[in-house]
Amino acid sequence: MSGLNYIVGLGNQQLWDFGRAVYGSSRAGEFLRDLASGANGLDIVVVGDSNTGSAAADMWGYHHGFQQALWERGYTCYATPVCPLVTGFTTGAASATPNIWRGANTMFTGGLAGNNPLLDGNTSGGSTPYAAWNPGTTWTRYGSSTSSPPYKESWAYISVTSPSWFSANGISIETTHPLNTNGTTLYYRVRYGRFVGSTGNICPIVRDGATAEVTTRTSFPALSVSGGIDSLAAEVSWVANGATSYQGGWAFVAPGVVTNGPVAVHSHSIYRRTRGWGVTSHGYQGGETSTQIGEKIDTVKGDPLKEHLKELRARQIAAGGTGRVLVLAHAGVNGSETGTVWVTAMRRLWNAYKSAWSGLGYPAADLAIIAWVSHMYSANDTSAGVSPPAGNMAQMRASSKTMAITEPDMTVVDVSQMLSYNQLVNGSLVSGVSRSYYQKDASNVELTKAHLSGGLTGASTWSPNDGYTELSHLIIGTLIARE
Image (cartoon, rainbow, N blue to C red; front, side):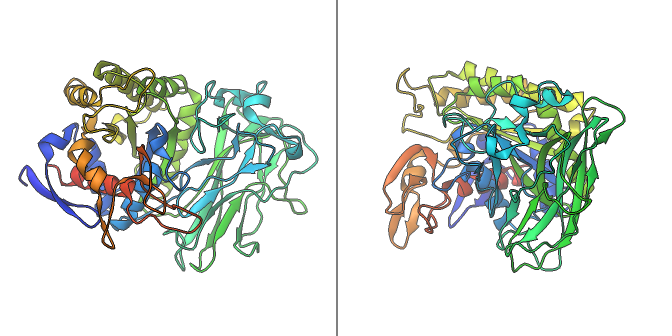
C-alpha cells in the first residue's frame, strides 16, 4: 500500500499522506484492523478535556463520535460503556442521567438523605477495604468536571443489613442501539465487592420500556472469604426483541431476593457475547490542560484505575475477545501550554495506564494508546487560553511527533492534517448551506470553536454536520489503512 491513500469520511473524500498524519507504534492500527475483520474485540477508553463529552448533546464529543463512527463503518458493537452508579454531583435531585450513546445511565447523587441506606462510597466507605476505590481527586468520567460540585467518580455502598433497598435507577439502551437486535441474548453485568462476614446481597434485574420485568430476579451474596478488595461480576441475561428499550438495575427486592448490605457496588454495563467494540469515558475533565489531565490519571493509577481496567478486560474476554484496551488521549485546547509541557503530560498519562495494567499482571501487548493535540482552534494554531495567554498548539503538534520517536509504544495522530482550520470553518454543504464542524446551534449560529459539532442541537433536532464523528472516522480510517 502506498503512502498516499484515500480515507472516506462523512460525505467527502480526501487525500492524506500517512507519513504526516500518523506517527509511532503500529499497535493501535493492528487493534483496529482486527476489530474491523472480527478477529478480536476492543475496548476503547477516551480520556481528555471537555471534548470527551461536550457537544450540543451531553456526552457526544469523542465518546459518542467514536461510537457513531464505529457503528457507521459496520464494526460489531459488543457492549455499552462501563458506567458508575454514584456521582459526587448533588443538586437536590436524587439522580443524574448522562446520555451514553443511544442509551442513558442514571446515577445516584451522592450523600442525599433520601437515598438511605445507599451511601456515596467516596464519603462513607472510608472504613472498608473499598476505600481504595476512592479516586482522591476530582476524577470525572460522566457529567462535567466544571459543574459545582463536579461529577466526581464514586461507588455505591450499603452498610446496613436492613432494611432491604430498592431503586429503579439503572443503565438503559434504546431501540436504536445496535445491541438491541431481535433474538440477541444480552447480559446485564454488575461489578460488586464483598465483605467478610457480610449477610448482604445484590439483586440485578432487567425491565423493558414498559417497566415489565424481562429477567428472573437473582440474588448474589456479598460474603467474602478472602477479605480485602474481593470484587466479581454478577450477570443476568435476557433475549432482546429490538422493539422496546431495556433498563438494567442492581437494586431490586422480592421475597427472599434482596439488595442489602454490607455490599459495595462499583459499576455496571450491558453486553453481548461476541467479539466487537465498546467505548467508555475515562476522563471528561472540562476546561483542564494536558498537565491537569495527566496528573488526574496518575493520581488514580492504583486501585481506582485498576478496577476499571479489570472490568473492561474481564467483560471483553467473557465476550470472546482477548481483553485488548485502546486509550484515546486528547488535550491541548485549554490553557497556555508549550510542546514540552504537553509531551510531559502525555507521558505521565500513558505511564499511569501502563503501571495499572502491569500491576494487574496483564500483557503489555494488549494495551495501546493514540494521543493527539486538540483540533485547530485558530488559523495560527493557538489554544483557547486568554488569561494566561493562548498556548502554542502548533508547537505541541511538532513535539508530539518527536514523542512518537522517543516513546516507541505510543501512536500519535496529527488531526490538523485530517481536518485543517479552513475545513473546520467551512465544513460541508448541507441543503445548500455551509455548516462548519465547530459547535453550532440548530440555527447554524456558532457557539464555540473549542468544541466540534455533533449530536442534538435542540430537544429533537439532529446536528446536520457532525464534526466529532467526522474526525473519528478519519482517525480510525487512517490508522486502519496505514502500513
